[in-house]
Amino acid sequence: KQEVTQIPAALSVPEGENLVLNCSFTDSAIYNLQWFRQDPGKGLTSLLLIQSSQREQTSGRLNASLDKSSGRSTLYIAASQPGDSATYLCAVRKTSGSRLTFGEGTQLTVNP
Amino acid sequence: KAGVTQTPRYLIKTRGQQVTLSCSPISGHRSVSWYQQTPGQGLQFLFEYFSETQRNKGNFPGRFSGRQFSNSRSEMNVSTLELGDSALYLCASSLWASEVGEQFFGPGTRLTVL
Image 1 (cartoon, each protein chain N blue to C red):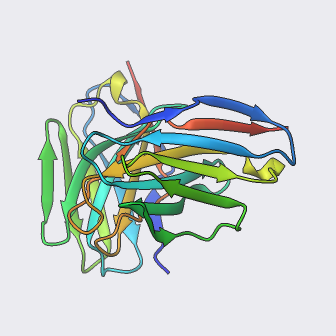
Image 2 (image 1 turned 90 degrees about the vertical axis):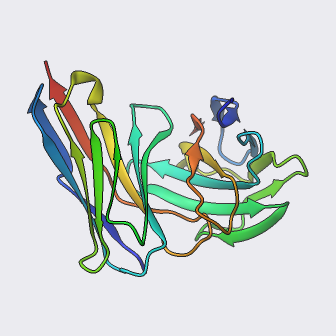
Image 3 (image 1 turned 180 degrees about the horizontal axis):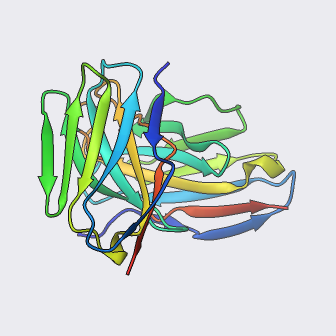
């Protein structure tokens, strides 16, 4: 059974800092991995999708990497801003169907 | 392009009642998945529909059911509500069920069972 773990559970940083969020998964036979952002009481916003054949994806200040063999992904946020404060979730898809297995998330606070 | 919409946004029910939640996917998307989010269990997969057929089902009791219509809109039903069913129910849509499948989520329906 696939298990997804995110470390740390919570992170507080000053504005402007570069930071890394970690995601690990137990079964390396994944189809793709998706990073989401969730604001309190809201739905999920898709940030980046990495296919199993890819090593990384970039969007603006965000960069996500994938190392399937070690069962790890990282989300790098450059020059963090208070508006980045949210919970960040990673999710893996084992097959080409739509079922995602989520981690518990990292709650990020960026202090002005 | 409009995103995924869910109705109602908030719902309060009492134990034993039943509830129906609705999800309209992004135009052109044919796959709809449902997830339950609670503080204790996190996000858990309920089921997935594609072209009016249930393609995949999570580990939830039979009280949780769903369906998809020909226009890809989906409904989820929970019968005989229990206190533990209080949660944020999220719907996600993707273009296909068998391909790349980046999933886009709606704002959720917050269900409170008293």
